[in-house]
Length: 139
Length: 114
Image (cartoon, rainbow over all chains, first blue to last red; front, side, top):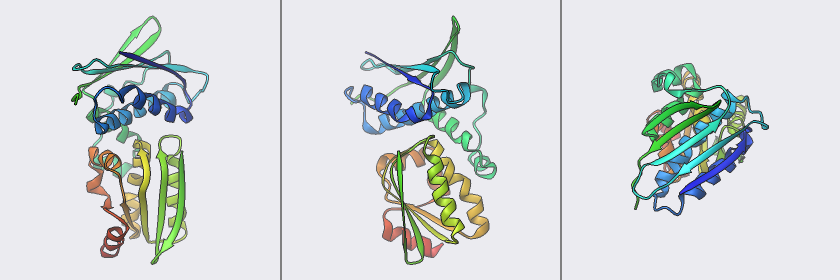
């Protein structure tokens, strides 16, 4: 089943994004804890996109697509037309360095990489698709 | 949206977080802690019992104070986290870097022993 949500790049909209994710996943036999981890990772990816690729311009829209199929990995797509902010190009900073250099951004990258199984980027017809894959345990 | 309440108990500043902290609201957490420090508190307790959600932006705020607090001998203890919020801290191993108590009683004990 596919769920789609289109939203402007204002960080004030993150709450709405989280509600959409929780709503999409809640009736699919996925544990609360796994849903909360997915919400955390996607919140991070969406806020990165809003801030770094769209400078929080509320008129820029992006789309979040969630694909849920029982007993298959979950697939999430962030689709936009801004500059690509590829988190795979960033090394995951050590926790000590984050503390020492007060690198608030580094935490988010660690978080997404530890929650998601795969993060890949694709460019087609002027659109960027960031695809995240996560295997969950259906209960 | 986050709502922040402050009260003082036994010489400690208790900062209660109510609601959700994300990239749009982490600044308020930062300001509340900075205010407490500015007022000269050396014991800061963060009440997370009504904290429903925290993103990396909020975690980053706590992280950013670790070194300063060590240098200035300011003690901060978090308490009352729900399982989900506690899990967010442990995914990143922040439970090893921050002091976290079960409830307010335990948090006060920890802050006095640090």
